[in-house]
Structures are given as structure tokens and as C-alpha cells.
Length: 86
Image (tube, rainbow, N blue to C red; front, side):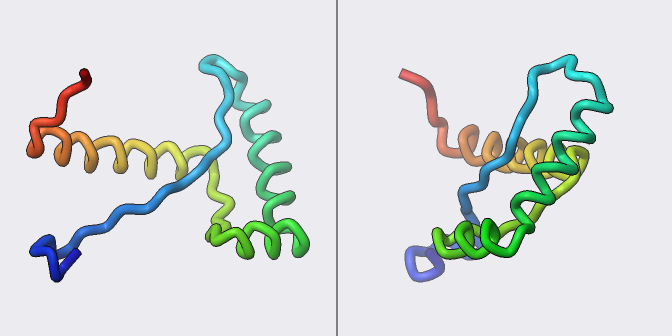
């Protein structure tokens, strides 16, 4: 992208697990704890990395912050590029 005249370009795909709004905090914490344990299991981690994934295993607060930052970043790109839904 630098060669195309777009310095500092960064884009990546990411995945996260989500629960319905209003799910009790205790349930979110338990789901998060168990899911992090699963993705950090050696065999699961190896399989995910083999698929090109970088396994992070964040807390619910960390993924919410990341998602909000991504939303803000891409909103600027969409606005600057005047992208609209058809």
C-alpha cells in the first residue's frame, strides 16, 4: 500500500464471540474464561495458527474497546471515501 501512495495503511480481519445484549455479567465472564481456555489449549491454538490466526484471548472489556476503535477508524475511512450503501 505504501507503493500505491497510502502510507500507514493497516487492515486486518478479526473474530470475536458475542452474546446477546443484556446477558448477565457473570455469564459473560464465565463464557469468556472458558473460551479463552479453549483457544489457548495447545492443539486448538496450533490449529488456529495453522489457519493464519493470531490467537489473543482478550477480556470482554478489551474486545469491546478494540471493536469500538475499529468502528471509529473505519467510519472515518467510509466518510472520507464518501462510501454509501446502495
